[in-house]
Image (cartoon, rainbow, N blue to C red; front, side):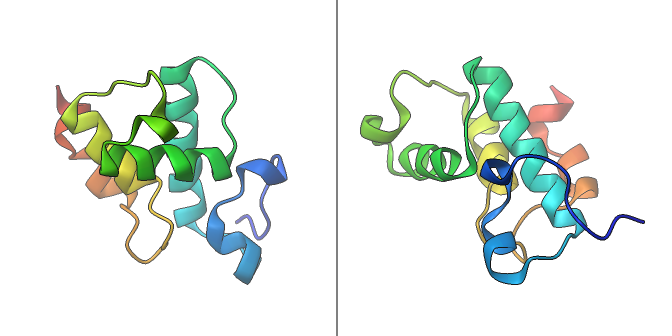
Length: 102
């Protein structure tokens, strides 16, 4: 069982700054961040990822630039990168998400 995170501090989810402990919701955050990095083909920090998700929700190109995602992918990304870990999707829910089933 892991009790502490591994990786760059720029990838830590928002709750880690406050609580400083590891949970499975930490892994979900990293999955979303990794998925976003793969789609965008570049390194993206947690801070930038939050701005991108906010921009996607608001349809604001100031934050998203040229990033274009399908509605299903955008929905999953928002659930992976939900700032509040209590509202973040879990692994079982993620595996049942429409975007992953297509």
